Structure formats: structure tokens, C-alpha cells
Length: 96
Image (cartoon, rainbow, N blue to C red; front, side, top):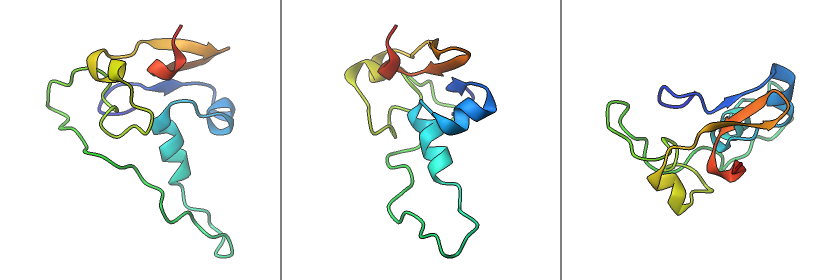
């Protein structure tokens, strides 16, 4: 969920193995590894401006922080669509 909207829904195993939405990917990449011998990625994290949760957002709520932003993202909110069996994402990367 990003700014009050679901961006991806899938069974837990599917979501962890194959995150599709860029926000889900960023969330999972930010999870610390509880092993001091494993070096964490230094440059991770989301870039861009976090929109106000009370603002009237046009287009995709994640577009100001998405590394894959396209013009359509800024104009139209993507619909939630099935991208694999029982795996749904709201992202223009997965046009029906």
C-alpha cells in the first residue's frame, strides 16, 4: 500500500519471490539482512519527493518516486490488474 492505495496483491510467497510493483521492490530491498557478514546495498532507498497524503494526486501516487515513470503515470491512475495468476499490480508497466 502506498499513500492509502493498494499497489500490489499476491500470495505471500509469490510477493516475496517476484515483487512486481516498483514500490514493493523498494520495500523488500530495504529489509535489513540480520547477518553482519552480508554487506547491505549502500545506494538503496527511494529517490524523489514524497507527495502529501492529503494532496489531490493526479495519476499514479508513486510516480514522483518511481525509477520507471512514464508520461502516462503522471496523467492517469493505473488500474489494479492481474499480471499472473492471483498476482495483481496497479502499475502502467503491466499494460493489459
